[in-house]
Length: 231
Image 1 (tube, rainbow, N blue to C red):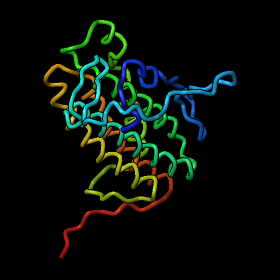
Image 2 (image 1 turned 120 degrees about the vertical axis):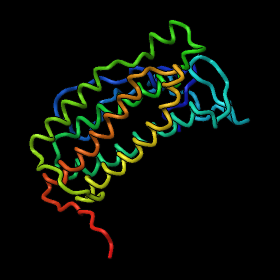
Image 3 (image 1 turned 90 degrees about the vertical axis):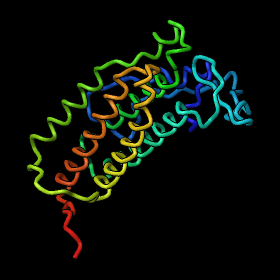
């Protein structure tokens, strides 16, 4: 869960670290890289802090909560989702798909999702809220991409199984992780501890990943496996 270790001094590693581009990209990530070391000073903070050795972690607001708290469960699922999308992206790059820049952007947005989840509204100051507020624009972007894919795809007339090549199957896997992340975030949003648009984004993201999986299979000329009742 290293991507979402939230400590006030380390928030710079999570919040607004990404620059979003609109053009298709190569294997270089969209998230701006940040090195802790310089030529003058090659000393950086250790990757381990030991602050969680007793089974507690900190939210961005400074609360110490058990690691099994629902917030950290949601952060872990969101982190896993980003990793699954990253794997799918590598397969899609191998096939030359032009939509991989969208996966880059989504991974960056998931960092913002994590920042919002890690800032429970009940204990947040205005300075916390202003830095981690989640906007609705990414939801509109997903809907635009889904509509663009759908215009090219044949109508869906059967249940399909995760298939259609490595990129497509990996996107289907990411979709299932997305659904789990959404389930774990839903009660946090309902309680008012996270922005409502976070849940909406994850809900729309699962639809995007399903559609992108079908699109990848179509572009590769791969056959999707159709569900048939076992005899």
